[in-house]
Image (tube, rainbow over all chains, first blue to last red; front, side):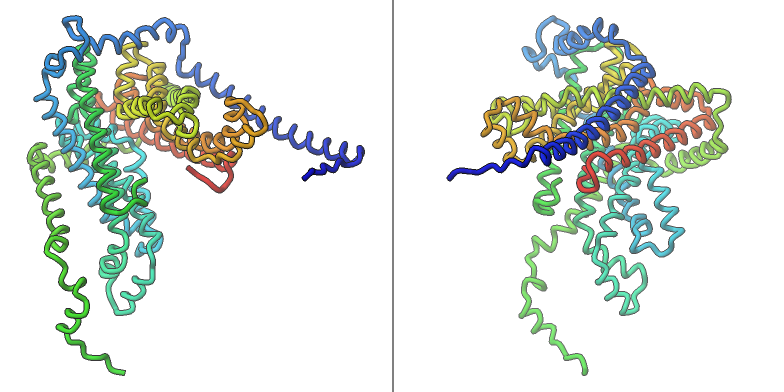
Length: 294
Length: 281
């Protein structure tokens, strides 16, 4: 079969071509202006952040050799040739890692409990009154936007050094983040069961308990597990400001240039994060089916 | 119409799977809750929680909150504004750097570009390990390399986002439609042509959306990396907390909140402008 390509008369073609070129030219211009603005912003930012390419090039070798150094034992050998020597402090580190996991677990659980208590007031469809919704939403927003480690800095001063400050910081931050996600689940819930229960003369509390909660538990648990995953990473740096966990050991090792310790602690952190990610992913898949695994 | 009398025994017989569930499924939920609480109690004890300490801290916290009012920068407002600018610069530069370096690597990590598992696997694990290390840790490492200051912050954000972008970009590429790539190949294009004209037009809007989103979230990260000495407003914040200048602290926190809200707003608008109303990553 031959395909006949019809060619328009010269004049019509010229008009179409001109229109096409104009349209393309306009898009190109917009793209160019956008790129120019972006480039200008980058240059401004580079000045603001005191970026000095010469420093980078001079010291980039240091970055590479830093990894070389943290993978070398004091004896000058590579770390993996003598694992016992490399992971000499594993008892202490495992204990600190356990503390880190406990911090994130307790913090997540406390945060999830508070988020659970607050989210019905923040959701559009279940909040008893608009001003209550407004207040709770602003409260959650505050708890979510202030970084966890800033809370930790303040709590270390109020509650003293130690894991308690880390737990509370993680709990507050999780309350903010989970409260928002939970209330979004509630907003997507079916309201017909609520009407059914309200028609029997039930109170607001009973409506929530018997109409909303059964619909949302799976989503809540899924988000809480995801949050636990994030909190494990967060808890691993809480020690930087004295709020407990493995971060304390790491910051000491980095600041005092105990090179092989740095790589050993980093390794234990990365492995732990992997294991937690895989376990919670598997757990979420088991509990709530494939669709909840995002 | 009167409700029909129901014999409970009859109902039990008719719906055995509702009334007579096996003990294992009935006990699973309470057992999980008991276990969760047991770990919680153990955690509270192990982490030195005591009511007296908690309430003492709470009253201390109340005292601190009172000291924070009203927020007042004192005479250091210009310094704080400069620090805020530094923070925004760190976020913008770090994210851009990460995106530039992550794009080629993400091509290597995408299944439809590199079909070989042996090649892809190490790249994916490499990206995973980078993501497993927190931005603050990267900041500490870079401070050792380029010294204290915002430049270390830029590099820290760039490295830790490189891991995240590599994964996200490669997922975007794997989700792209292969038909356009095949079309290019059919008309005689090379492998690079396929990527440039078949893949990138589909993938770029998604990537642009993700980059903007990360600039947003990196504004938050950039506020805290100053705590370990990598420049920006976090440095001022940590200093003022340590010297207990609570009015300045509350002012700085307010500044951060306002800046983050402003960036959220702007990047939300930009995202809609670039990728339209449909897919917000």
